[in-house]
Image (cartoon, rainbow, N blue to C red; front, side):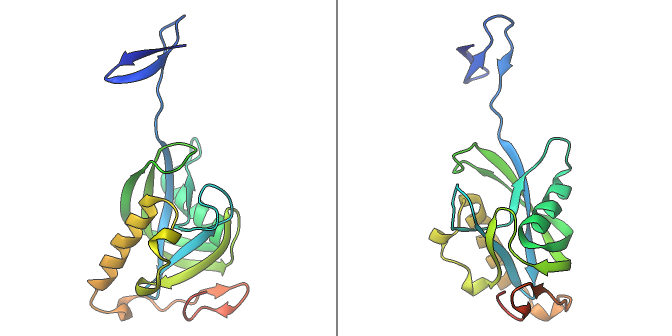
Length: 180
């Protein structure tokens, strides 16, 4: 391999066959899960951003649909089953030391499951818009941006009573009336 200027970028190129090794961003997917005007966050169990809050999400597996990834990650990390309502936003990220990427976030609602931390999460909780963790406690700039947009969307709604009245239970504390 040798480095050469190709399409305005310095890229690794095979000296034997000329194949170009492109470094592309990794796709990730997750959900802004809202329940009773609160948003679901998880606390990272592992690096990067260990101990920081984040929007439950993860990398898209080869051959996996991005919506399936989003639902799978919510179930694995929070124990909840969700229904995707719509696309929430698409964000580039550059602050993950493993690689740069693109995260696709969907707006989703809870349809089942039991709230409990799992997989990459050490804790999970629902937060009111005015009680989100401080920005310096939220890992990933793309997640901070998405949560700010969610907070702004909450402030423009007419009434939280327009949401379905659903029960979410926590394995540790029973029904969730506020933060789980």
